Length: 399
Image (cartoon, rainbow, N blue to C red):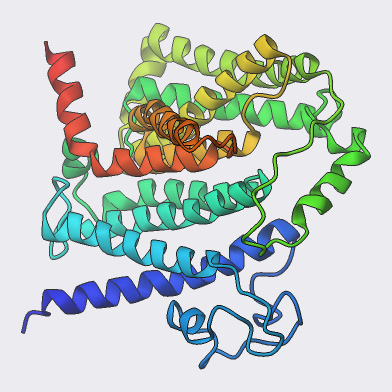
């Protein structure tokens, strides 16, 4: 007997709300270097443990408790309710669009491994909800959040060919998949990254914006971490540190040089040496290898775009432009949606920034917010409009 649609919708929404409850734990604990598992949830104000029933039920407990702690009566931030509701709605909305309205070609619940694409996308979007919330509160994006999505993208792109027909993956761009030339770029960039990291760990290269050079940085972080749940206080902008910003940008350029040189070098070798190119064509076009290399290339393209803007902006304006968290966030997105679509997402994001700026001007406010949430919205729009973007690009390049 077929499962009624409303049951799928209810289970998906409730599952999303439960994930949102866990994301609230991530949002509070991760930037404070606390375990996500132990100790059990407790009130930040009085330290009393929060019982699962009836005080830790997603959505309902916040309402039933009157938005206050049962014990100390300190107000509970509406962020907890908002994150749970938003995550539930995103999970449900994506489920309906994919499996009810068939928004994406090749994604079906009952065939073709469509559930795998859905799972990979909700992992990415759920994680980016947490990253955006942390960025809004503290103006930082913990890199471990980005690495989690990056790992999911690598594994999903390589393993997806065993769940979904590789021909469907390439035809509908369901997962990243690299050509032989693109794969050469990915391998070269990876080799260059390893070289840069070895030089960094060996002390040959110096890390940019090294916190060890600034005694005030930890104090600034501690100040930003105070009263994290006070919903009446606006997000604070990060304090300006005493750095020579153009010098720090030059250090980042030096770090990136081996990545650029090695990627170009690998590409040239594959193109110029027929024997190497023939072997590489056969090896790199195995579906799992092509998927992994496509994901790796998406990572470097996503990182490279934002990092390039960061460096050029810093050199031009003499202060740090965008954060490295934004760099890694877009790299993580690239591992899931691929190099082409992460570029589109990057150019969609400014429209949300302009909309925010316009609303601030209309309401005569000047509050600034970090760029991570706009990037996340751009990524969300691209996975929703994926097929329209794909068809438009096919039309443009075919003509």
